[in-house]
Image (cartoon, rainbow, N blue to C red):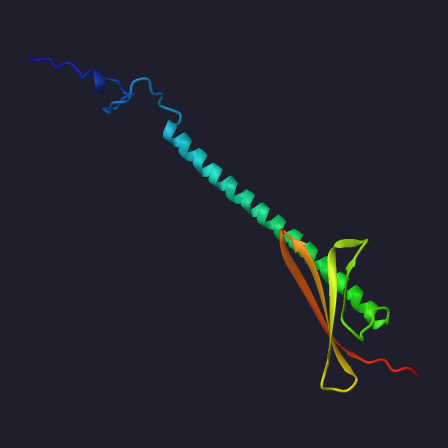
Length: 145
């Protein structure tokens, strides 16, 4: 009777016929898996940081535009009250409260008698770029009683 000896590789149940790298632990991550995970996490964090940066810029731009609208309405109220003349164009700044903002008015006559078109432009610098807000109204000439 011929007796066969069992194969030493197949006799070890932990190997199950597959050869494993010497010194490799059955649990854990390979270097490639760790590097891929780092690339994925870095990319995700970069995208999130870019989103915060874009949101911050949009917030600052909205804040500047809101200030410009409020300043334009304030100057238009001064014009309505007669503090600023509507007879000719003018310009100035909003110092000392808002020295970064400037205003300019342009007066145009219309085809309708007694009606004047007034254009108020507020300008400011934002990220080295000049921005403007324009407010236009039709104003009736004042009559003295």
